Image (cartoon, rainbow, N blue to C red; front, side, top):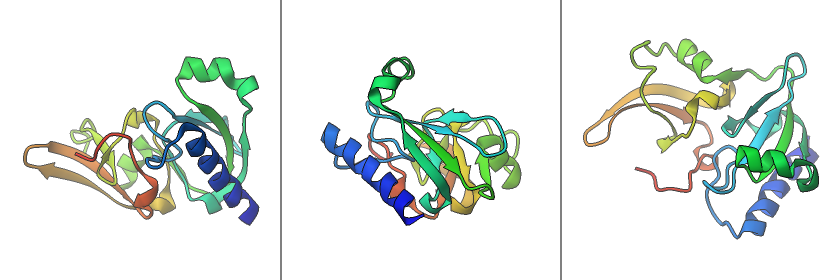
Length: 167
């Protein structure tokens, strides 16, 4: 397990170094130009792809970085820089955004609000896949000048960052 965590850290470090990035990770996102497409290879159901994966590295059984030679066309089509195949542990409760809304009793009328993770704007929130164990709370927030939004608060907010500034 320790080896897998080190591989994830190494992969992110290499990607950031190769693009000269020193900040901004959202799930495995580096910035708006350098996104990581995560293919979640579930042990017991069909794979799912997302650029909005939030998972504890300890809950990853295996990680495979698809070589740029093999993934160049897909990366160009999907507007991502790299493709990572992740196999989560069998018992990890990964949730879609709809699952999060249901589990945390978000009213249907509020489900249309913009979604933020740790107060950071999330692009394509409908693709969010999040480890239930990473969620601290889900709340509907109303702020003057910004309006209302749904904020998903995670245990490790330092791992959720966007390239653009926090509003």
